[in-house]
Amino acid sequence: MKRDCERARQNASGPAWWVEPGLQAVLAYRLGAWALRQPMWMRILADPLYHVLNFLVKALWGIEISRRARIGPGLYISHFGGITVSSLAVIGANCALAQQVTVGVATAGGRFGAPVIGDDVYIAPGARVFGPIRIGNNVKIGANAVVHRDVPDDAVVALDPGFKILSYRGNRRRAA
Image (cartoon, rainbow, N blue to C red; front, top):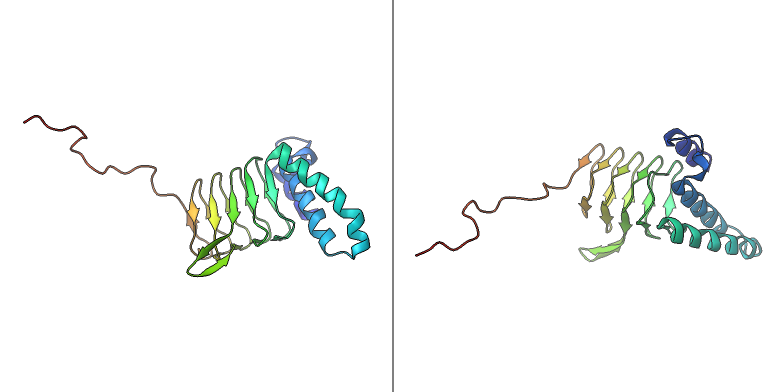
């Protein structure tokens, strides 16, 4: 939690870094993940608090991070809204997620699973990362990219241009 708070403080636009929705979501996730590792008597006390906080984060900020996901220290969520992280996902240390990001499950080649994301990865707004794939360390995934194959270390992934010219002949019939 300390590294999560440090990253939020470093990246905050003002002095009130502790009220950032992304930090609130990460702290709720950390509480839920911690509660899962506790004995049953402690979970009986911690789980209701987690469920209330998790509901508020989902309802107010649109961020859904499963407490069963494995996330390293220093997660930074820059903008709230439409963020989903699967319970099977693994995210390394010092990663950053922007708004409208999905890290989800899929089936590929007969294998079912979610991404394993390395350290120091940035996932830009609107990106979708899914399936049993590996994203290397120090990777930048551009806005609206759809990633469903492995990405090596130090790569930059970008969406193809938003359009391609398929024909220069127009779309009207020529008069006979």
